Each structure stands twice: as structure tokens, then as C-alpha cells.
Length: 358
Image (cartoon, rainbow, N blue to C red; front, side, top):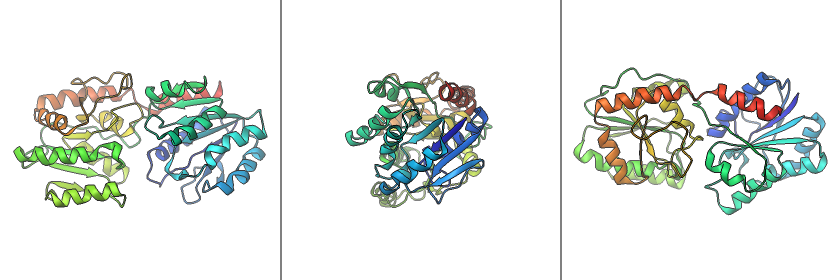
């Protein structure tokens, strides 16, 4: 079968959807797609076994890219959306419609990674693509419910697995004289790092030896600059370590060495949180935030394999204090490790094999 795969982001770009796309590009040949084309930005790494269309996804590339795809004559076109690499261009939103207008027989599948927290303009863009698609997949239950109102073509939830190597935590005694907390992932307002910094500042009033390691980069966005300024202004540079982005192996080991990972998502946990899944799969005690209605990953239970709290400073401090107990950390970590065994790319492979070839 012939498949054209499209992703606006791909390694080495720093984008969770791009990392997901890299894994999917490895799975597609394993499920029977033996003639493959991929549309990627020119500067990324290209996967083996694919014909490559290089595109910056600008509006003037819409017709040339469409024509190259039509010439390839794919049985299916699979698109990852959204990706940072698409930018604000409408090209990718128009492409499914243009393909359908040119060839009614062409089948289009779409994986939507985010929808509920988008502006109305962003939702219209996604709706355009959903209406043109034959099959739509999502990465959490909340988006399944919302997008099913647009068109009856929702086929599956793809629960995002860990996307870094798994270094299993060995023990739960303190790594230093006080708790060492960790945070990782791309820094945007919806990740809640501002809440964590405020909570940590108050936490160390009574726990002055506690540390917070940020395995991420604070770059040049207004939000990231404000966080960096806050750390300096509040004299937290001795307690907070910012490593920048680490290679996957070093990141996995560093996370495993921390006592507790805190991921204070503003909209709560869900199946699309690969950073959360990775920590749990390693057996790391995790503090995160309560999910919206019906959006919790199946089997994740507060005080059994994770500590969940409201996305506010006071609730985070209470959860951090709770994690002082080694017995609790050990129980949470070991239960999280067992739960994490269910989160793997084999599950994604089975879902894609069923949905894409049906």
C-alpha cells in the first residue's frame, strides 16, 4: 500500500508532535505500507525508506505539494496536526480540501493532537481539515468528544506513549538531604511552570535545602523571559538549576535520579501528555494536576500511582509537603511503574494497523 505522511515538525526540531511523528514514521512500514512518501521541512532529519517532498508549508507551495502527492498516487494521506513547523500558514489546512477536490478517491487520515484549548480561529482551521478527512484520530478523550460534533469520522484515541528511553528508578531514599524536584518538557503557559516556581519559592521557606531541577530551556518568548527574571529577582538561582535541553539518555537518567517530578498542566493530565507517561513508566513519583471531566488516562488514580492536585500554588505546596514521606514515594513510584507497562508503541501500532487499513 502507498502512503503519504505529512508532519510540520520532525527531529531535531523541539516539538512533542514532531517526536511523535518520528516514532510513527518507523511504525508505518511495519504495518504494511511498503511504498512511502513524506512531506517535511528541508532542515529536518529524513527517515529511511521514504520519498521526500521538502516544504516550508507556505501558501505558495500549496499547489506544487498537492501535485507531487497526486503524482505519487497514495492509497492514503496521513497528516499530523498541529505542529510548530506549520507556523500560521493556511497551506496545511487547505491541503486536504485541495487533494479531495482534485481526486475524490483519495483517502485522508488526520491525527489531531490539540483542539480544546485552541482559539476559535484555530478550531475553525482544524474543523476544515476534519471535514475533508475520511478518518480522524485524537490523543485524548476530551478532544474525541468535541471533534465528534463536527463529523462522524472519529476512529480512535492514540494515547501518546513515552518518547524517551526508560531509566527505571532504583530506590526512593532521598538523593540529598532534602527533596530534589524535577520538571521537564517544552515551556509554554499551559505547562504551568509559573505555578511551580511560585510554589517552590514558598516551599523552601520551611525546606531551605530542597532543590528544583528544570530539564528544559528558558528561551526568548515573553513567558520564558518572565520565568527567568522571576528566578533571578526572587534569589532562587542557588536552589533552581536550569540544564537546557539534554539528549534523551541523559534526560532519562536525570529524571530517574530526582525524587519527585512535578508537571502542573493548567488543563490537567490526559492521554496526550507524553512527558507524564515517561516519568510514570520510570517509576518516578509524580505530582500533576486534576484532569478535566472524563479525560484522565485509564488506570491513573490519585494517591495510588500519582498525586493529583488543583492547578494553583497552595495545592501544589500541599502536594509537595506530602511527598516528604519515603513510604508514600515508594508506593506511588512502584505503582506508577506497573501502570507504565501498559503505555507503549505496540498499542499505537495495533490501533494504526486497524484504523489506517480498515
